[in-house]
Length: 434
Image 1 (cartoon, rainbow, N blue to C red):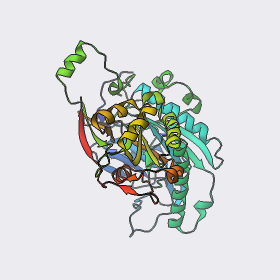
Image 2 (image 1 turned 60 degrees about the horizontal axis):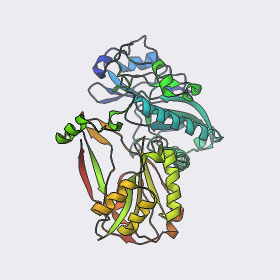
Image 3 (image 1 turned 90 degrees about the vertical axis):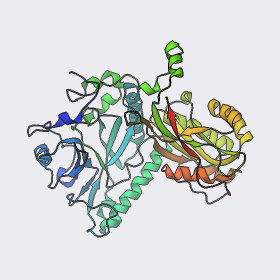
Image 4 (image 1 turned 180 degrees about the vertical axis):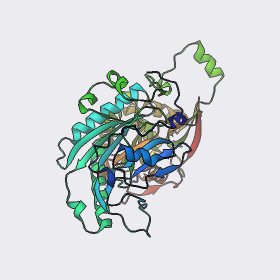
């Protein structure tokens, strides 16, 4: 099959013809799901009639050119014109069922990262085996950055609550509890997906508009094999991008003449937002903000190792994010700089240790990276706030600015006990990297 270096979604015009078959059999009743798609001109459209099968879905596309097709994770008595959660005027929709879906991403798109995502998916699948209220349905390759694990909810009591609002709130509450257990166990999943009953997920059998690879259901036995051994068997458009072996962004530069020339003539490669470890409004206090070392392992292993340091030094509540490869840790405490220098030496956080000694503070990336092609890469996914049980033994005050930072990044930290230090606004900058 011919593969192109880039995928142009405009070639999808007419791709979903009447004889195009999309398997919807994995859904109990497709007529109870909402179907939405992104059009070529980047606007969104929803199916205005119930979708019974592939033919009715393709007919719903009509004169549009879908570049990305999605389906709701929830089943509704009436999935047509489903109101938004904050809509107070429309009649409250009746939730009939809700799939438990875990989204595992490891951007950017390359074989090495897909292998990391595959390993994470298998670990989560093994972890979920003893959860009796959930039955595994299937796993899909998303067509780009990772995998989606689908489960059926066997505990049906909550779906029988008479009041539709209370019913949905109960489902969201239980999903949040499950999500907390998953992230506390160190599984790096997208925290915006699982607990959201109004969420849509990419529809298996449809093409990913940025890569040309199809979102495909993968046999669970295949998932236990290395990605490189079976990815060529996955369905894709004839013009699909070729998956690189490794991300160009993750390659280590070799010390050669070409590198020296590049140093003399640097070019902007990406933009990102960085935050300072310095606690704004104090003289010599810093929070522990750093990307955990590569040798700490992939995110799940890195978080487990970090938990040992939380207990060792009594950090208290600590927030974690991942870009799919490495792990960002923020300890929002106002720690005296000299004391933090000793801590980073003991933990062998060598880069942070050196910068605290030389510059008195350090900058850490807190967003994905916007490339010159205006594509976001290595976007951060919240993992969880861990170590809260050590809050009572921590002697350092909270850093107001880093608490606010964590909240803005999607992980709120309760600080009902202990004093607060510094100003609320974090010190951030836009960084250019070459």
